[in-house]
Image 1 (cartoon, helix red, strand yellow):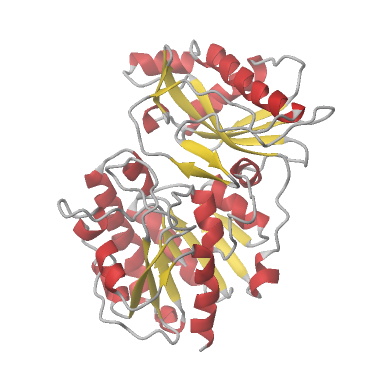
Image 2: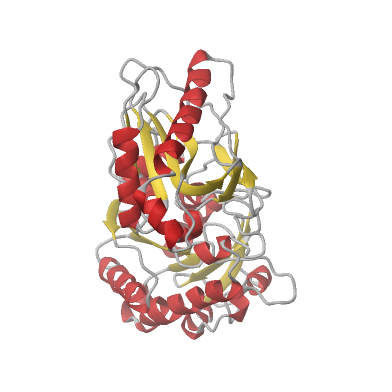
Length: 416
């Protein structure tokens, strides 16, 4: 299963979607071997976060099982988490006065800069009533924070300290992109004292990190370079317990491996007790070639290989049409060119899809269905010739209402 993170868009006539405009001869050749369909990765009307999309693609229903991205990313980042702790996905952002002006601090924060800022937060932020915490930078602007329980009792029933994702039931729903927001506030979602206390803690942490980050030498230097300062921390998807889920092997009877580079996907792989191969982030042709070679090598050792390719999602969030198109073309040249010619693939069922759509006009995740390619096994070619949203809607493979039914369907096709 090859997952093109956020590659799907919304067909609206002109201009063509990035998938439609991109030159993808190698992926097109694979499409001609199989059939196309469409899929709502979590469910119709739901614009999912990546963790919910990935969890669903692996055959688990995120509407029924609360996995908590905060806990998952902590596991993926190698941060100790124990039941009772309060874990949240975090990220460096830019604020100016009472406005949140950039949720990703210009998306040009280096991991080295982020680590310096995180070190200052860990050493200088002191919280009232003293709960200990670990704030860890991961990749670029991304981070996680875990507040230690000890004698404290926390609750995950709190709103997101990030206006772009709203907690709804067991998952967060992406909101349409905006240029700027009000400074966020975390609220309890129930009257329990633990929820009130946890929301107050998140608000206090956000306020105090701003005091530490705004004057930090890294941000003084960024301002001199005409870059946005990383002077605020957003937090979302709180969790207090490690999810109790059946392992991938127990559920599906398949020896599985995940190839990924970011904590969300890595954490899900580890949570499901899949073998995990972490590979450094990158979107160059060489980066994609390394991933393709690893896929082909592991395909002989495992029943199921999952590879997550992050490239198209970020320019979708940033509204960069040309760059999103370019990233898709780079995946085709660097990754699919190797899969297209691999003799091993002739004996393998291949699925190519997306974990969600990230329309470049929206600058955020949407509830649009994503394309699904299935090639090999008993799947007969349906005459499709390109991996695009419109072609997928005309293909002969199914129109799936939930991503969690894809994997069992693939097992049936492989066994037929």
